[in-house]
Length: 193
Image 1 (tube, helix red, strand yellow):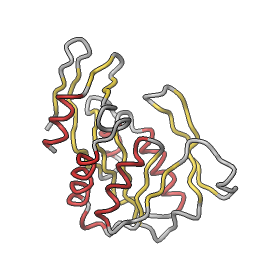
Image 2: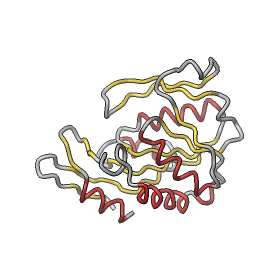
Image 3: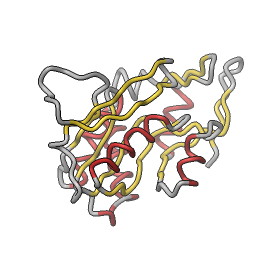
Image 4: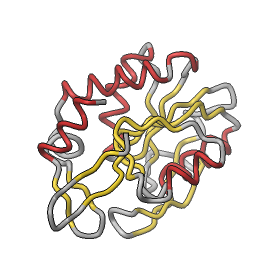
């Protein structure tokens, strides 16, 4: 997706530790027009999948998932919470997820009321690096007996193993921008496609 790649090249900042800072347009300050184009592209890619639910993880994936849902006949968006709140009840799916960005582990949870075996679930997330968040979301969908139709990823760090490992397991992953390499000293970003 050329618009996204241009935005990454113009506004993205490469930090030490293979971190790409895109918070000025993607996951802190939001470029809503860009989100709309992202949603349209995910619809084009997954048009034939009869999506009934969109699943993401808090917090950065929520906005992208909500805008994307508009193009899937306003399919309900469910987000996995990173901590149990008093209003979620005791009947939920859970999976352990290690966060690359935050350097910690969370037990993500989704109420059993919101995903069931009849659902065809599209996962939406902002980044794919090591694949832990995606694996956790897939685990939750599998616990529900639902069908994973695929994962729509805004930015994939192609030089990290997550995408390759999950594709080898048969997961359909459509990434809108795949980064081949980044250099924190020069700021250079090279795309795979």
